[in-house]
Amino acid sequence: MTDPIDPTDPKFLRIGTRASPLALAQAHAARDLIEAAHGTPTPLGATSIVDLKTTGDLVLDRPLADIGGKGLFSKEIDRALLDNRVDLAVHSMKDLETWMPDGIVIAAVLEREDPRDAFISNSHQSLSDLPQGAVIGTASVRRQAQLLHWRPDLKCVTFRGNVQTRLGKLADGQADATLLACAGLNRLGRAEVVTQAIAPEDMLPAVAQGAVAITCRAGDDRVLDLLAAINHAPTLARVTAERAMLEALDGSCRTPIGGLAVLSDDGSEMTLDGLVARGDGSALHRARRSGRTGDAYRLGRDLGEQLKAMAGPGFLDDPGPGGGS
Image (cartoon, rainbow, N blue to C red; front, side):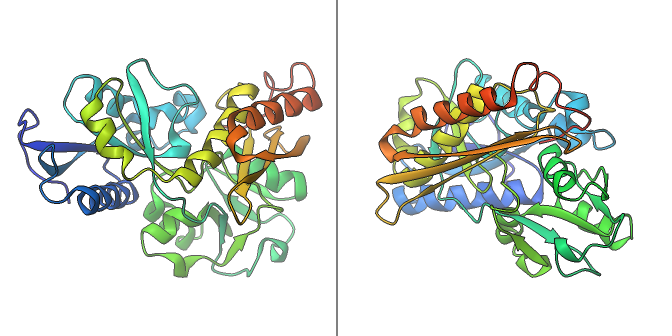
């Protein structure tokens, strides 16, 4: 539940979030970390969670790319930040656009959950068990492209909505299987529905999948200082590389792009995998780079430029059919 407050009341540290169950779970986790680090009330007041409806949550009958892309999950929250109706905002980091809006910064990143995609089916044990022509429900062109590149006989149909909605569509028999993020299911306490956690070697996750970002107004030093205490540096390094790769590719919201950075045991070295594909799976380019974790941004940019060169002119402008993230 969110907390009923006067949004102008200065006694509260107001945490903005989408209203979905997963978004609220992430907002509560962020609040718990802030209070554990700073006490209750915090130096900026008692915490209170404010849920905000977004266009991405309200329009569910069309692919996300057809209505403006994944930024539709954040623009109303961005507006609330800039209008001083909330003090910080909690996001699934994969939903953030590559370039942050003017006046808003990523202030902290929480420790990453399992970044893998989850295969969920009531009748089949794994992706490889799917019969010829099986139907997969997914809203993601990234998942669709990798599926169809491997198994062009599969049929993908659009599943949008929150986790509960998608699982309900699967239970109703609208598809033979669906794909969701392991991280979201774990955070909702629904890990038991996962039939198979798909190895990144078989399906590369979305950039920043499993990471939670906290944003605030640029120059709001009180909030920036507060959030610095809960920033998870290893996760920040990983998503910095992945988002730098995405920045270099500069694909449209219709372009299937995947990326995952992994750190060495001591955290000093990083390996980054990335891919770019056509929505129908007819072409897919994948590459890997390794380097020092301190060079995360440059590593990501270099891999993005390498993938762009592999794909060739015009590839990112004509990614094939599909729409999603």
